[in-house]
Length: 356
Image (cartoon, rainbow, N blue to C red; front, side, top):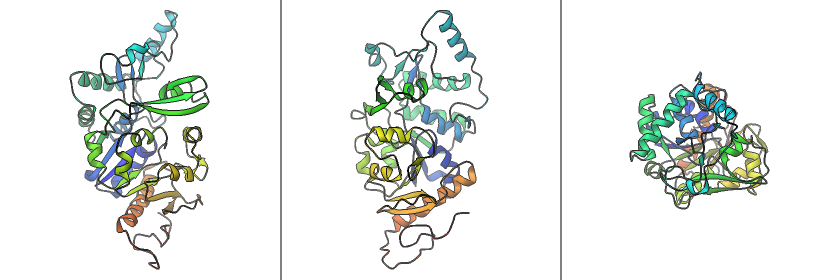
């Protein structure tokens, strides 16, 4: 059994390779839900859906959001109506009192559907309507995610990090805002002063996440702050990770990030925006997979390979490096004078030959 912690891009890119290296029936994918928003009355779970759509062969891989080839007639009409009615298209939060009133599925992250600042495709919207309706009928987010996975033909076990709402709130020079407003609505333009995972102290890991924490864990090249941070903020998660073998793939090559706002967000939370900063943010990680061009020296196991993932062959190469790192950690071997092991990891934990 092996558990993958997933944000919206890095880990989903790794999963096709992971299914070639690990037994797919033994993989659990835990998706971040700190990015979730309720917009126009429907709960949108971006990171959960990216994994589901990717595994179902539906994902728009140009944007890593939504369904490839989806139409946007409803979204476009919402924008036209807002313009015709002279309404500010947003992002428009519902009133403060409405953020926690009524249904409990989307606290602190409720947006009006007027103008709809996030582009949601028509088929994509059907998923959100189904999800919200099932939640309103009393099912948990874990149960609903399994139902949607079955409906989409997804075989991997995909679970939310929590069945309770957690909101990633970014504190900026323009005020506090939900991560989706910062990233989508404002295009990451405000200066970041801090990041808060609102509600995490009151939430619990989902039952499947809690069970999966007893298995070896792989953290893909996801944003340490807004993709993995909400999971670590849940009670007991860091402690559980300290008790199980954990391997992480750095999203950086030294101080250069592959994509996204990870560097900016790490700097804003007093972390060095680099591989070393990731290692400092993950004290529970036993081994790291670093890019072959990343010369960062760490006092933990290190396996080096080309960590860029552009296709399935790349994903398999990185997944094999994760497997070697896990094997080295799980073996628990005292490497004093041990030389190279049969998995291609030398006495320092570095790969002894390139991946092919």
